[in-house]
Image 1 (cartoon, helix red, strand yellow):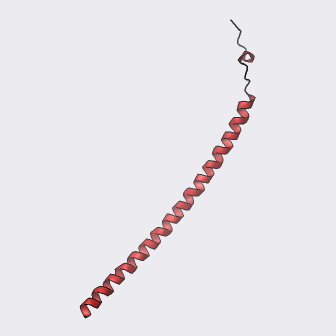
Image 2 (cartoon, helix red, strand yellow):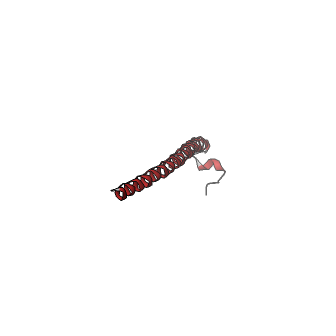
Image 3 (cartoon, one colour):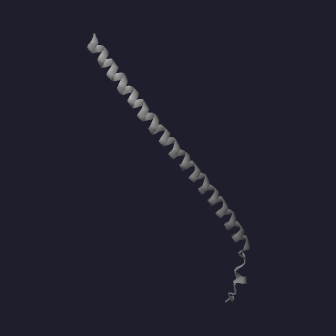
Length: 73
């Protein structure tokens, strides 16, 4: 009976240790996810800004190529 209790105690100790390790790993993963989401939001914002700037730039390009100084043949 004492041997069975000792085995159970050892298993419970291992389980508690594993839970602590997994909890720490979970916290690290949440932190990494948070940073990744922040980076993603920053990149999305930069892409939107770049897209808006390109749209403005495209509006300034003349649609008629004859204004580029090319002589018609």
